Length: 124
Image 1 (cartoon, helix red, strand yellow):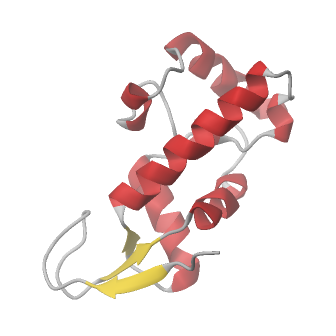
Image 2 (cartoon, helix red, strand yellow):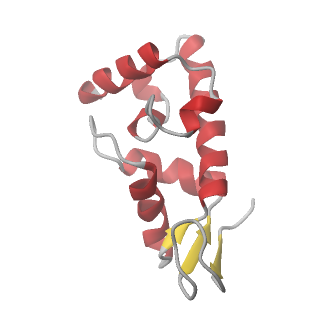
């Protein structure tokens, strides 16, 4: 399994400045962070990247790696939901992915379903 790595930035990128520590998270890092988000809460992508980075002592996460993992998780969770798996038994991607998020534009998930998942989240 691939390990997360931390890069000291030599120039600004991903919302961080030169000298800050940027985590390149793995899919497993993102999967582990999603359940730590509060029930019923929707977190911005930026706040989520900070949450993922914090246990590693990093200042932030690579936007590209985080978004790539979130897309994979969302697509997998949507396939599970379509197969009849309960919302409480899939990773709660909807706590980060909303119809207004940049990632949502790259998914085949419709906005109505996404809003319903967010609304239903309070009970899980």
